[in-house]
Length: 308
Image 1: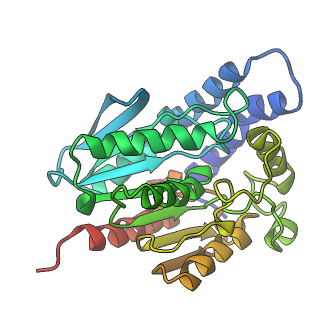
Image 2: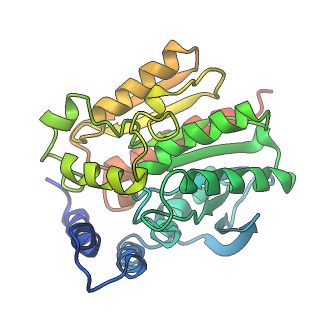
């Protein structure tokens, strides 16, 4: 049983998703931008920014980006964070809480790109926008040795694709990565899509199949840029994967961790008993969220702190 405040936030999150669900079912009373804005505004209220951080905006080669700066920052330390939302209904303001907590604990400046989303901009536009922002951030002079990458859900999968694209383009890679509840397998062929379906209060397999169809717009779910379990992941940086045991995405996350390890990428996998999709948003409300975020920060801090 969740703490009372955490349960209220979870109930609020489910309610906030209703306009998106209705839009996916063909409702015409709202446009996609209106449904998306309603959802993002609700999450901004449910998961507010912590004290000790400030927010600004940056333009990364045409990609509007939220910049989160903690009061206590290690100069040059940077985190590139890719928000979730199934490539369809996420938004940067929904992540003021999570990005703010990340920034404060990691003592890093956090950049969250506002990539375009389906159905107006389906595959591969969200990935292309995010990679554009990544390249632009490096072009500002950010030192890759002091740069990490993280993301959740769609963003947790996309970070693998961004690192692959950087590797192939011979662009500097980050020091380390943390994938939170990654949507790593859009085929949903793993056992968890069946046996966990109905356990996670936020994501069902049916919902994810609908999202995948909207995002892919005819592309195959096995495309390596959409499902990193099918991608060439050699020579990527150390990666931590955190997944809730109740998630329908569990099998995909486990397969991603194994795929990285089999390709000589140092990978760590944390499966959190009883946890649901992206429980990290509940930092300050749920002890497991606080601990998972501390583990993520510790993993990145070890990679970003020079050995003396």
